[in-house]
Length: 190
Image 1: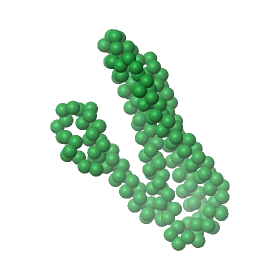
Image 2: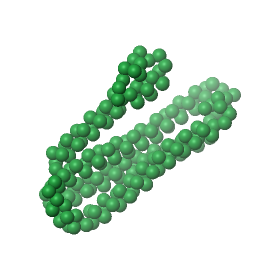
Image 3: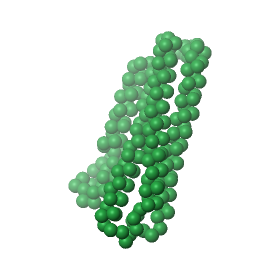
Image 4: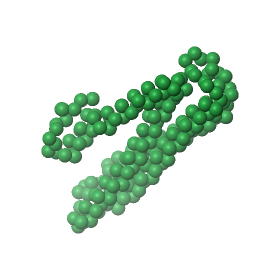
């Protein structure tokens, strides 16, 4: 980016990332509002669901605990997404203040270091928010049965582990950043 005169594509890419994060942040608010509405209608929901054969409704208190767990999970996701959004905002400002291609090498290195640091944190916050969504989906299985919940959570952990540490996507990113990688991309499979 530093060596290009026109940096519109760089800022546009950040804007696209920021819009994705904004979508999830606003969706989290809607989900929390829906869950709080259901929490306010606990008696109706418990009566309705206790007639279904595949749903276990132990008590009103158990129902409320399950809903509160989901509310807390989505609230955590909301805060992670909004923090990621702010960090992407800061990155847009930082990119606007990027040194020119004629700047000192030290200034360029510092810009690269700090930009990388900021973007890494923004991406990590976004990823934590996405993981919250994934675990919330597993927590929905708790409404069916505690054993189904345990099974779904185990599957989510296994899937996330594979995606985070054993995927072709990770290999491609690693190989792109380490041109002389000892393990080529073809050794990985999805």
